[in-house]
Amino acid sequence: MIKELCIGASMAVLIFLIIMGQNVIPLLLLAGLGFFLYMLMDKKGLVSSSQFAGYNSQVDFNFDDIGGQAPAKQELKEALDFVLHAGKITEMGIRPLKGILLTGPPGTGKTLLAKAAAAYTRSVFMATSGSEFIEVYAGVGAQRVRQLFKAAKERATKEKKDGAIIFVDEIDVLGSQRGSNTGHMEYDQTLNQLLVEMDGVNNDDQVRILVVGATNREDMLDPALLRPGRFDRIVRVDLPDKAARLHILEIHCRNKPLADNVSLEDIAQESFGFSGAHLESVANEAAILALRENSSLIHQHHFKEAVDKVMMGEKIDRKPNDDERYRIAVHETGHALISELNRPGSVSHITVTTRGRALGYMRVIPEDDIYLYTRDYLEQQIQICLAGAVAEKIILNSQSTGASNDFNEAIKCTRQIITAGLSSLGVVWEDIIPRECYHKEVQEIISQQEKIVVGLLNSKLKALKEIARLLVDQEYISGDELREKIKEREVIN
Ligand code: ATP
Image 1 (cartoon, rainbow, N blue to C red):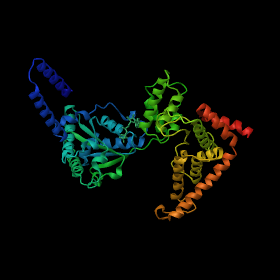
Image 2: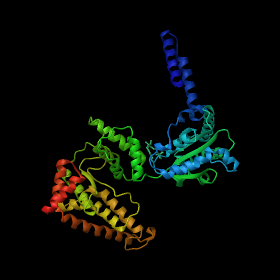
Image 3: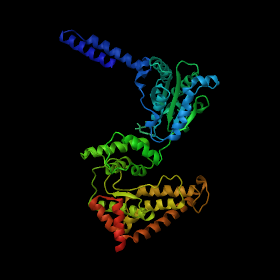
């Protein structure tokens, strides 16, 4: 703000001098030199600690605003209780908690947890990211670490708070194993400075500083950071399960007008594998879609489309020609028929709309979250993957490049079968099985499943052809409509 005011005032003075007929060139040269020096100091991290002012955010956020993550919240709260009851801790001779590390996939709420931790402990919250410390100049990162700790203490004192939480996102950038960044003394110095600052935290400090680090790459961290006395609490923040997804959706729909037909539970069921950030995006996109349609309420179909958008990307205005469109329809119908035959009620919808890199797609309603797979389950997944290409071959007598992704997925499932010791090879170590032997097993599993798919699709030929035609005409078939059509054709077949 002050910077903008200064620039504005200088411009006004300059214009005034020009109007008065004064020679402003020496003044401009002087200003240029001043600006250059300022930039140089800024780059070297030498501008006062007020540069961290921007990192501070007043936190009005608590653990109830975070969906799911019950174990992480519980563990974090337990750790924070040590900070809250510092007096007792000193009496018992317990050393202060200096660091908590939050690990987990992107978008799972690590930043939110750190913010809630600040509110819970009535501390100021300073957020920064590991990458902000790394500069080409040696020593700048270390200088910034010192400034950050100093700024945190100053701010807490100014705001009359007992503590400060310094949140370092992407701490792996700053705290990756020393020596791993070849020729980069800068990284090592910065990490050393962080360790020094953390070691300097004491129970009797006027302002208690707690460093909360977040990373998706715990394996990259220098062991010195993880040793007791530094980040000795590691809190795992996982992708949400179904109940947690529902909770997150409910939180993000609190301020949105929902129609009566909206079942957030169904959306939670369909969004297996989504992070909190994905779910926030689903709620937001659903509202945008409703607005586009001039609807005052958000309906279930807006949410369904929002899930597609978050999963596959934005609709693309690419129109395949008629032959291609029919081929895509046959391909997707093949996937859908096998999915329904294996698990009735499993298809959410099929479409020939181009989205992201997919020319069409079939979306399934995942079973209740499952984390262990049997061989039968994996074989069924392989069948669904192969069904698109098999359907093309049966109806159009040829295959296309559209199936390459499906084959990759099928191979992944096959690998899972082999590495989990579920194949005819028994328990094996993937790295030392002879390549031919491995290849033969993969081929065998795939061709067995392909035979099954050929048989199943041939028995549903009429349904396959007619539903594919219908899909070309309608562009979209819902799971319920698909099941109805299969039933009707079963009578005719
Ligand atoms: P990254 O590792 O990429 O930095 P992160 O784990 O720190 O991600 P956040 O920044 O905390 O993730 O979350 C991003 C956004 O996702 C939040 O602003 C929020 O809208 C939403 N979100 C994520 N997790 C949750 C949750 N558990 N409850 C509610 N909202 C969530």
